[in-house]
Image (cartoon, rainbow over all chains, first blue to last red; front, side):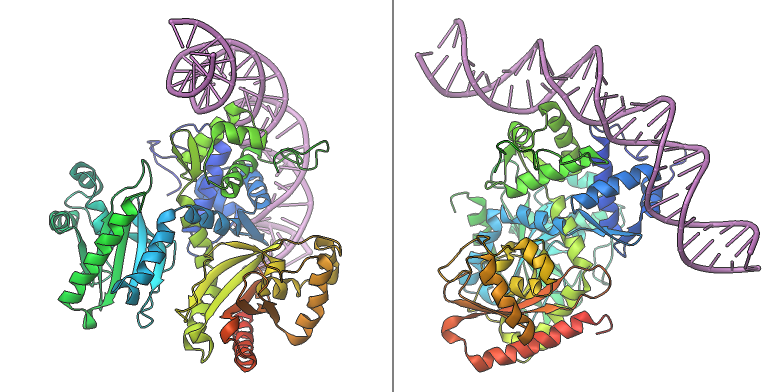
Length: 265
Length: 265
DNA sequence: GGGTAGTGTTCAATATAATGAACGCACAGT
DNA sequence: ACTGTGCGTTCATTATATTGAACACTACCC
């Protein structure tokens, strides 16, 4: 993971950056976010990222000064400023506000657990959660990531991509992450579902990420030029889920998606 | 806010940074987070931060590459990576998980709107929100900031600081931000309340940030060595609020605070 | 104890990122 | 059409951040 043998595919910085210090600082943040414990030492970072210790030290000083990281003894951890910045990003997404407002007044959805998520590469990031149904409490939190193949929103979102791009991301024989016995196993299985999703206009997840739980999801037509791809999902217990309830929820999800897609609401 | 008249108090970089590019990149993110529209042009940033355009251009390229910002035409906005990083920070705070678990099973709190916040300089940042009471929906979101003088959690948190530090942050004649007629006006008024808060062990906010709304809050004894200062608050409508209900909520808040303070809780 | 392996820090030399003036472009005004 | 003002980009130069080897420190182990 640290040393690439011969080729320099992605050794350190792939090519030269216009501001290497910034690129490396970002790599430090990523490394911290990716590390299981969330805490690494200067030496750890220096080793993993292939940055000399002295340079790493400088980076950390600057990052600490900006409160993007904190240090507790030898350990480095993400800083609270990141919460602010993440929140600043979300607060600018009008869609989130609209999402809450709609859920509250929707006949069926208002009693359910609804989420809005965005596509980020091969993952989905949850942006906000509406909980009208105290019985079902999700363990996932805002900002959490989930592979697209494992959730209804993920499938709904990649169904919007061009076949070409999907094929590139998910070759037929690609092994997918597995969480339950019903999780999709290969790129081929995933792609097979997309046709139906496009036709029906919504995606269904049958205990593929959590046993006992089903999900319905739709994607939101991209508003504006370059906004993120957004999706909406409802989560329900398989035990209490009924076809006709599903039909109604999909109807409301689609309505919300339509209204989020039209800038003038 | 942009131009300092004569003195160079905080002009550009106060002193030299060990990695100026990083410090400036952080300044760019701050500027974007602080800007009302959330979007600025390269020239705007260059002007506001006093960074040459060519350097700014380099910074933006690196930041964009790290997906810490996005560009839509000429406009620069915060990037989605920040949501991930903010979430990564929060996911490492065990206190947040514990907070949810406790709220769900607490006799009184489980039906109320409860929040956990952290002290960040002169502000409080909301980390998580439990909504047991669908009637009261807060407009504030996770990650939002609020001046300490305007909310019960803020007051509870600074009551834990040494008098010396409080006096430095809030001189008697310091004007405080005002949101309602009942908002505290001066540093002196704020400090006067701290004595009672320390004695009682909780803070009360009587329509000081929102008319019609009251808040109760306690601070959490700092767990571990260098963790953030955490606080808990319950929000209620003044119309339906009763003394005895308040007493019970404070009791539960204190219990939660105690358990959050004990690592083995 | 004295050795070893691990921290993070220091400092002078050099490779390199920051700079600002000039450039190309797009747009609005007259 | 022609200017003026705004944008972001380019490029050679210089100031500067990065570097690695040596250092100081702690903790552990035999």
